[in-house]
Image (cartoon, rainbow, N blue to C red; front, top):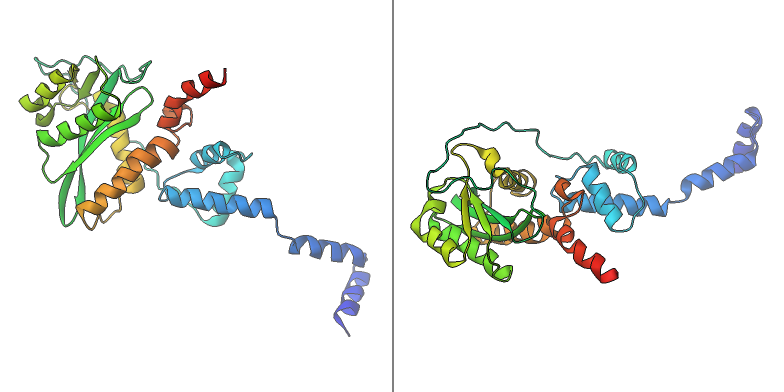
Length: 281
């Protein structure tokens, strides 16, 4: 008995039209091109985020690229592909009320800033590279949470923070009358750093001692960098670390990674949005 005869016999037994069988088989053999492209794109965005992006972030990035897709579909595609976000849970911070007498907490957690180049925040974290610790200083513009400066060094000294500040100052066109906020690290309280702030005509603000929430945007940035991007085993060399961290801060974080503070827009895109809208009008 040939294949066609066998199929027709089975269809007769179950009282099913053979045409219905062939139609269903044809449908199964047809590739859903749109869905396949979407699966590839989801996998690509997830890989670009180093397994950190969840369904909400991927949905936002897909919509920015012109795809009409909801979070439920993205979540289903991620499940099919076996993609699980490695985003961390919540973190509790200690609180304190001690201010530095000569440099008070002028910012007072007023993290919502109306215009760019009004308030910058700075902080230092550590990165393992080349069999030793290196130190990363970053400057963040609070307006849309955009990274505007950074520096990496084997020494956590004032020179490190000055380099990050100088990069921000030059890249942003040497703005005036900025408030610079940081924790009470000795680097930020040093004479050299304070002199640089004076030269740039910036007002200094410092968190209360031991209170991470006074500089919460910086804490969140470093947390994202370490949980989403930096390899768990660190970097082979300082050069590798500098190149990879630069890519994350200045390109991926600023231009691609959706930020909840900006209603899902990446910081640089959110900052440029008013310019785009005024250009259209």
